[in-house]
Amino acid sequence: MKTDTADKTIIALSLFIMACIPFFAIYNNWWNLGLFWDLDIYQRAARDGLNGLDPYREVDGMAFVYHPLFLHLFSAIDSLISLQGVLALGYILTLGWFFLEIRKFLINTLAAEYSAVSSLSMPVMVSMAISSLGVTTIATGNMTTYFHIALFAFLLRTLRQKDRFTTVGTMVLIGIFTAVKPYFLAYILLALLDKDSPRDKALRMAVATLVFVGIWASGLWMYPEEMQRFLHNIAGLQSSTRVDIGIGFYRIAYELGLSKLPALAVHLAVSAALLLWVWRGVKNMRQAPEAQGFALALSYFALTLVNPRIKEYDLWPALMFIFIFWNAYSPKAKQVFLIFSVLFSIPILILIVTLFMGIPPGYDPLHG
Figure 1 (cartoon, rainbow, N blue to C red):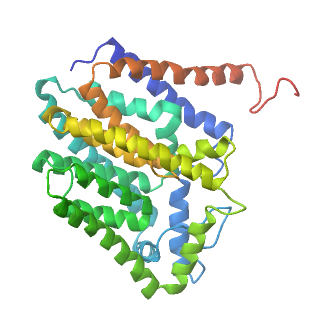
Figure 2 (figure 1 turned 180 degrees about the vertical axis):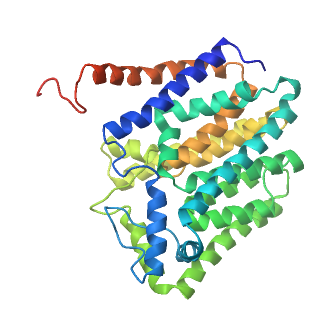
Figure 3 (figure 1 turned 180 degrees about the horizontal axis):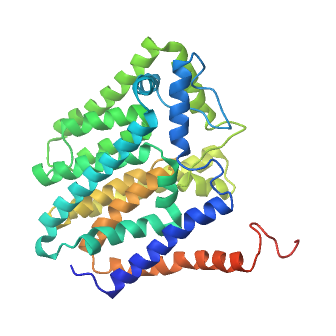
């Protein structure tokens, strides 16, 4: 898969978007919390725990929303070395492992046609540039992004080595991640695509559920007061004073004027239809070895979209996975990537024009 003019154009436009977005975000105060703000929340909570303060208190409108076991793990790490440094190193190692697994899988699939630029770099850059999803995700420093990346790398390794999507080890990993972010439990449904008996699939899915329940139950037993504060913060994400509804189907229905329950009903109906459509397509793909990676990426993307509170740090990794494998298996993907790159360059060009014209951010030409 040689690098052609279309590849070079897509990469150039994507790099242009990715370079401009941070500048305009800072210039227009879009990222008013600075960069890597979630890392600051983790570090602050860890040090609050060490200093006898309430780790779950709200500071500048932001609160720690992770299980007490992870809080105490963070505090233990920060007592020895910088938690932010450890997490940053973990992020880098996770990305390195992910790209290694992707490369191995694509080389096995594409053989002599593999090119790091055409097969990997180009679709990754497009996923980052679309609506600034990837750039914003990286800027948050949220660990959920790297949970997705680690899980997908594990799934790819399993698929490459064992010709299956899930193992007991996969389910243990999903159970741990679910204890941090409960919506990760949706990924146990990947087991349904494996060629096993219903009993074996159910047992593997039960493993993830038991790991999740065990970790949460341990919090109630070991840290009852902190667990109550943690649950209070989780509930506070959806309250009368705050509605943190992400960017998914639920958000669209809510923005169209539906109240919470009808919006949730719409979300569930659309999600069920999406899963049914993907299920039918993936079952056929599973019969073709060259389509296995795309089947996994498509399934992961669909299971990500069913999260009612999907955030940028959930959507971008899933989008990156599907773009990589869509590009690998469909000759038409590159044409779509080129269109995306051009379309998402236009707002950046408009912003550059207004900057050179001296028009201030948020200027309203009708009211001054």
